[in-house]
Length: 245
Image: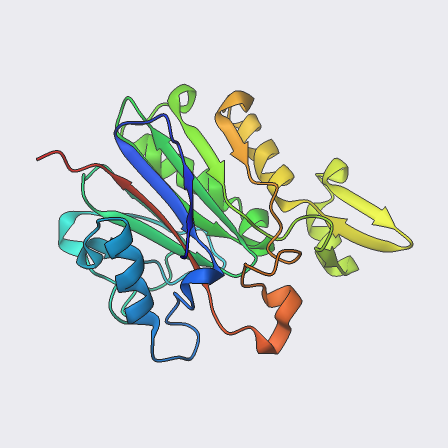
C-alpha cells in the first residue's frame, strides 16, 4: 500500500504531505498515461478533491503566486499549470497547493495564527535565487508573521549525493560551511543553505524541520541524479488548510 510522509502533525488547521515513488508517476512533465489515475488514487486516500489542486510550472525561478478560489484546478488534471511560477501561497481553506520533485527541495510553510500556507520548489538555482525568501515575503504580504511561521523541507538529494562542478560551487561562496570537499570533489548541502537563509530572516531554528532522507540514496524515491535519463516520474508535495465549512 503506497504511503505518504506527513508534516505539521500537531496542527489542527493545516495538513501537508509528500507522496513518494510508491504512488507511481505523479507529474505531467514525465511521459506516461497514468498520471491522472495516480493522482486520483492519492487524493482519494487523503479524502481530497483533485479539482481543488493548484500546481506551479516550476522553472527554477522565484516567482510566487497567491492562489484564490478562481485558480482551483490549474495543473490538476492536465499540464495547464501556472506558467513561470515556482511557489504558491494561499489563505483560502480547501485549496490544495502542490509542487513536484525528483531530487529538488520542496519547502512547506505555514503560519498557524494568520492561517497562511505556502509551498515552493527549489533546486540549486532556486536556492541561489532565494526562492524560499520570496515565498516568505509573499506570505508576509498575506498577513503572516515571521515569528509564527513553521517550515518543513521534504525528502531531497542530500549532501552525500549532490556532487557539483566548480561553476555551481562558485554560486555559493557565501555559504562555505554548506560545502564539503572530499577527494577533490565538491558536495553542497542545499537544505542547510535554505536553513541559513531562513535564520537570516529571523525564522526560529526550532520551527525549521528538515528531512534527512535522501532521494538519491533511497530507491523508493524518484531521483533524476540516480536514474538519469531512465528517471520515469516525479513525486508530489501537498499542503492545504482544512475546510471546516
